[in-house]
Image (cartoon, rainbow, N blue to C red):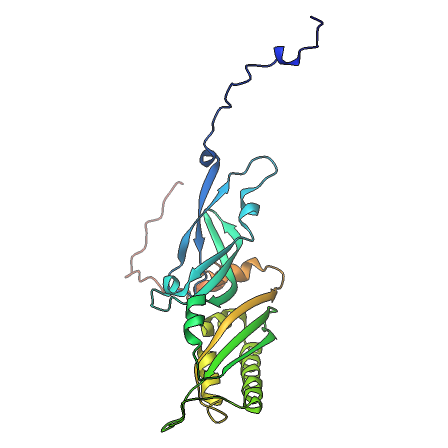
Length: 259
């Protein structure tokens, strides 16, 4: 047989199996940390390949989005509101996250829609004081007036327009004057939805008014110091507490002759 004709002679057996390596031996676990506004800081754990050559582990973690229920973040019972947190920095074995959006579960939204009432929705793009461009979606439903006998509670199209305008005005006023941290603080109890319900009562009584969704459209360049402060890790986290003076009770240590 001519040399070099049969390529299989130089190789091993055809049916030989490849050595099976468990992929988890090359991976590390990292703790996912939520911002300090939430009661529960430890959201969970995430997995990433260890740093090998030019592939750095922290780069593989940055940009990951975690969806967490508000009930898990606050140890509460409001499970229908979900917060999206994005990984922005890696500190040791901890992944520091920031707010990336909010939504409501589909089963909650579907349970709100009923017959004999009008559904009113509005959305608006607002920029916060620290440069985040957010798109907020509001939803509300008409309800019966006190002592109403009529079965239906349909609002006129002119009333719907007025309510929609009031929704956008309130959201713009509330969000444009505060930073992202304060926006999250207002989304947790949904105080904006309660404000809309109160102010629209004169046009048509509303109920089940919520900010149903928040999207982050644009964000400023990452400020690591600000992110650390948000997580209670930075120098600004101490809150100006310089500590108290230590009492000596007249004691002075003896002078040493040699060091």
